[in-house]
Amino acid sequence: MNEFFSTSNTSLFYFLGSVLGILLFYVVMLWILKKFGKNPKYLIPLNAVRRISDPVLLMLLSLLVRLPSLRELLGITDGDYWFKKASTLLFIFAATWLTLNLIKLLKQHVLGKYNIDAADNLKARQVTTQFNILERIIIFVVIFLAIGIALISFEEIREIGISIFASAGIAGIIIGFSAQKMIATFLAGIQIAVAQPIKLDDVVIVEGEWGRIEEITLTYVLIKIWDKRRLIVPTTYFIEHPFQNWTKTSADLLATVFLYTDYHLPIEALRTELTRILKNTDLWDGEVNNIQVTDSKAHYVEVRALMSAKNSSKAWDLRVHVREHLILFLQREYPDCIAHTRLLVKNNPLEKI
Image 1: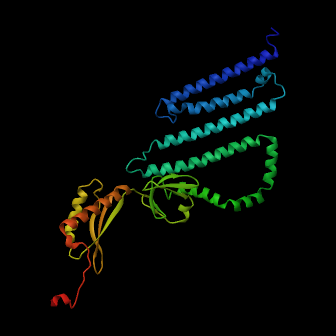
Image 2 (image 1 turned 30 degrees about the vertical axis):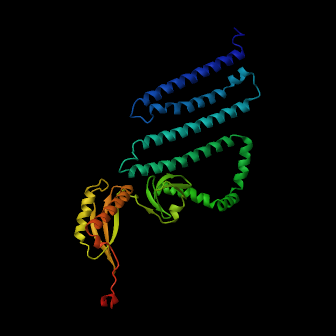
Image 3 (image 1 turned 120 degrees about the vertical axis):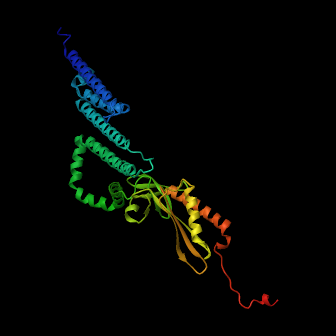
């Protein structure tokens, strides 16, 4: 019995008991998570259970590495320091992994309540933009803190850190001057997330280019141009320069078509034709329909056709559609009313012939 309960066997009992306790805790936790996952009221979906359980298992294994009984079983008496450091680093890594997974699950849960593909997706685009930018900020902070905590767990690095902090004033000034643009870009990304001058899927005109906001990061914004090109703009641009945002508060827009016609054109006939064209297309939202004479010059009259559409894409297609059919109407019904230049000739020599 004395041999059976020797030091090595006692360590084995402690180690096996710890393993069984960890396994029991893991199984109970997994059962609870799956039970919650079956209920749609709870935050944790069933397919996300593994994303939580895997880092938790790694955290439990890090505690197992720290056990003195494991070192006694392996016959290692002078490796306490490295076993404890390995356990600490493994625990920090697992805790960081778990935190990042929880952030992604929270984002998935919140964004799942909104449909960004809906016709009226203003609220969905606002929430998606905020979560995408804030998620990147939080991930950066969590990883930065995890690396910092892991480094200061070593005495040697901690002593170096104290000496660095002692001269942080001068170093901070030097770094501040050398990294002004980087810091400004980072702060601009945060400002865009809070103030939201732009959102995902917004229709904007930047540098004379019409496009949609495809991606917003902390450092740049990716704009999808109408001809499938991509325009990459730093985030500071949207804080420092004016630009057009066609969908800042709503997606519906007014579309205009300008025609330049002769003075003899009957405006009422053109107004009736515009109404007929709009009623025969699904691009019109049924709100605005008007013909206005906006200017008159010596040789022509400027006529503006005004109409509305649910979003910018439909507004563009509606403009093209109306312009084409109004031109066809003029060609067919009033060809003499298309703008032309009049020439008055006095003392025409041909009249004498």
